[in-house]
Amino acid sequence: MARTKRIGLKLLQYSLVVGTLAWIVTQTEWDRTIDLLARVDLLVLAVVLCATGLEFVCRFSMWNALLNGRRQTHIFTAARIELVIKYVNHLLPSRVAGQSLAPLAIYHYTDHDWSEAVSIAGLSTGLHTILYGAVAVAGLAIFANQLSGGILIVLGLSAGLYVVIGALVLAAGRRLNVISSLAITVGHGLPDVPIIGKRLASLSNRLPSFTANAAAVFQELSSNPWLLSIYLLSWTGTLMVFPGIRVWLLLTTLGKSFTPAVLLPVVLVTAYSVTLLPLTPGGIGVAEASATVVFVALGIPEAVAVPVVLLDRFLGVYLAALLGWIPMLEVDLAELSLDRDQSAGTPPSPDE
Image 1: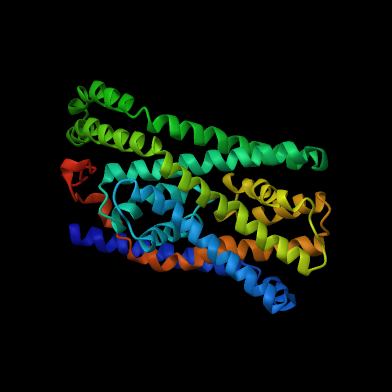
Image 2: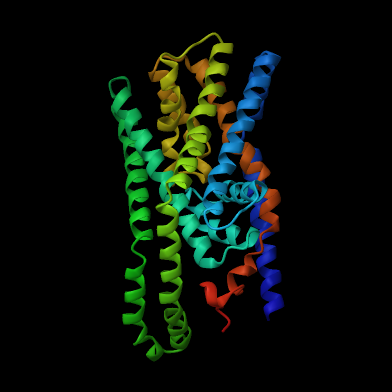
């Protein structure tokens, strides 16, 4: 039975990986991307690729900072976790998909137990979303007079959701003890539930220990100023500095400029914030359309904005998603039902 279940999960995993890879490949506008690359000077292209490489290093460093908060983890391990998440983000029309699998990726690739994996993933989600939302809100405030009412509403909704979700996740992470109390209260009546009562009671009995461990880890990491500083610097490099350099170089190469250039990173975060809304897998198409509308509103011709946005999205998002199928194949979904260290706060096996 266990073997059949493992084989079924592996087949499902491979099917999802192949399907998502096909979706990404078919949705990427290769002709426009290649055409823009052909028009870029080799030196500029080299700098663009260098900026993209540094962006990836910063991207991996965000996870590395959080993982190192508990025990030293190699940055290559952090890279695998990040690439898996970027890949899974293109399975469903929301970034929540990738974040929901983050604990499994952490558990698979590291020695962290389940409570640590859940806490680290939750802290990453909370920090990322609240930072993204704050920058997006600032961008909307700065450029409100230049954007149409429709785009302001859409981007405002998405930016607001970022802030709210980030704040809720961070608050919940520090109040997991409430779940423990609730589990104890509810657990008394679970054995009387027909058929699945004993299993639910077993899960409920383990929740207090699990949530206590997870809360302690979350509070420890979220109170570490050095860790948070490294995460903030890495986040800024990933989402603002290096994408801003890349887009500025591409715009300049095509004979257009954005002024003041220092605000270009804010524009990018604001324009892409619509990806939080569950519209298309990975925000494919929607993010490009949103960013193009924003750039045109800010004075960049559509003929220039479209290829620049496409190339920026390919290098900054789709490239990571394409690379992510490799580590994704290594992740064993059957680990969701296995215990590595029950005493350290791992979830119960559903087969017990």
